[in-house]
Image 1: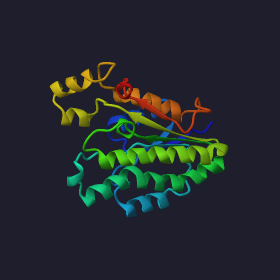
Image 2: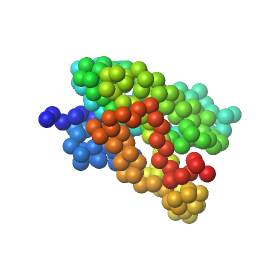
Image 3: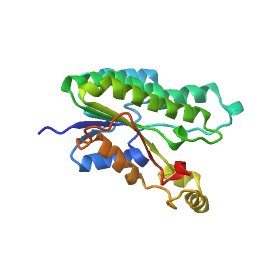
Length: 223
């Protein structure tokens, strides 16, 4: 049986890297484009990438790449708005527009969009980021309805606080401990714990679950 090909964006680190590695271990043929191959902030780069790979079939697409710039509303720049919306929302839609037709032709597809707890609850300084994460779940819900008859299942995974390289870079050990104390389970997630949920949704074992947001946050949004 031919390996299912999976496209995972933002797979150089963190949750994306853990997802790509897990898919590889489960026998998928994983394509994780580098930033030079696919710059989601650049309309031309996205257009060229889609054109170059227009005849390829990805049975799995994980829209993981994203950015989160934290600013109060009065300090948000136009550049921040356009860059964040392009990377987190517009470019993922363009990728799906290009590659869903092949899924439909093969009558099989699994799409996982990576959301965030800040698309479930909110916190100051996340105006643009939260808007994009609410938006990407809107994409999920619409495509789940639109593509269900083609055996294409679409879901959102919304991670909570996760122990990624960026988390370690931006927080001292004391701050990380304080964050963990706010989570009912008592600690941050490991990237592979998020990846496990993503890969189950992306796998052939998922035959019916679609249009859902799975929030993997150790109980944080249930408080």
